[in-house]
Length: 84
Image (cartoon, rainbow, N blue to C red; front, side, top):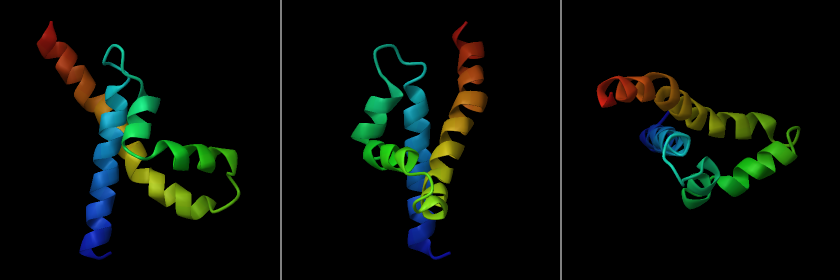
């Protein structure tokens, strides 16, 4: 993996974190954040045509899923502890 691939991977990871913010911020949806970040159209295409380019799209969205998971299950609970 070269440096540009690693950079792109981390960018998609952080996009996943921002999409997860849509689950706790009032008035902001994860879909809107995905559209703003440029992932929404590709995500819809991936879900509509799962068998077409599955491996390529799976590896593209894997860091997004990791970012979402990281935020939603690890960072969100710690914020809730300190906010109370």
